[in-house]
Length: 96
Image: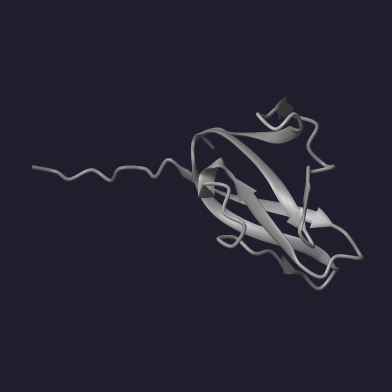
């Protein structure tokens, strides 16, 4: 009997935020239960904050926490309202 490889349905997604003044940035979303500590971001050599995650195909809502303040992603116009009366960004992860 031949074995077949099951293709992973996960994709590497890199989130980024370009902010010169931030001392600390975290990525929060429904993929990490909105945890403020699970996904700290790191500043790259160009001064852009980044975090890469392996995410399953699907729809996700997220935001950034910049120096303790919640902030939406200025590079992503896909948004939805949340239960707090503000907006979350929406990310659709599709098959490659």
